[in-house]
Image (tube, rainbow, N blue to C red):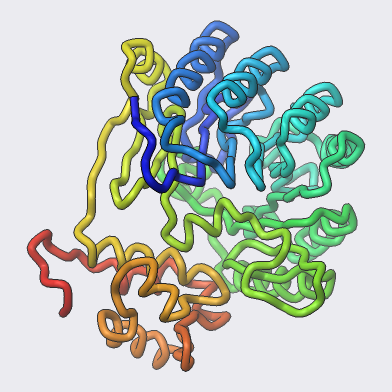
Length: 398
């Protein structure tokens, strides 16, 4: 049992590993399971919450998956009542991921009544052929129906997840999906390029030569996304994320940005609960076992189901923080980075920043370093410059 810390952790992620069907592109830990396994998982999750509750005062809570909305009403009631018992309610932002096929009026009303105030709906596409291609269990009609159910239940902060550069997706189909999705009037939009992860059916199809990756089309789709979202009043604040801002002038973090994710990108601490969930608390990173039964067994013995933990040396941790933070359009203000990490970006990574500037991927300003629009498009490659291996005995400066 963790005792009360001086400064409790204010961000909580909970992983629900169950799906009705594994999508063709998905590499996250998820599984199909019956009621007994899910009930056992819920009981274990409650036990894990209890073990860390004294060190938590959540400002942001995020239920991800998997498909959290797959849980039935009784299971949700059990989780939410436990959160109330452990004094974990009242987050300023509380997100639950939903699949359009598993949203019901009763479930939406229950979640809203108990404090959930943000829904992230995995739409991916509004083209039925592409939904089938991706292995999604919902239809395009379910998206519109579920969105209406959520609005009627009182949700005024909804994110739509979309994917682009899907095999078989044309620019015309992408534009049509953007038009229809944004016409719904959601407060947030997350758009991700398809990633071909090993051990997924989509990767196997690519390796078998069933289709080719069109990088030029993918770049064009990304450019179209940025222009289209901006023209509809969405402010891009991270590579793949766009949000409404209601107070007029542009800001680094718009009103309806996902505060939970901003905490990740800005190097904040967070607890990760549930099978395969990662956490980072005061510089110590952990990951739970990616096995629901093993996860349950460990919690039933009264201990957290942590597979591994590590504490990076300070400079390596700062480099990782730099890399994540550069995903945001605002980049890293030098003063904020130094307050967060204890290091000066201009001293420790001056060579790397200059390389990115010379390549046209970085912009060095008086008060900050940020990636340019081409740099954001290839932010993972840019981030590698900040993640060079640093031995445990490395000095504080290079």
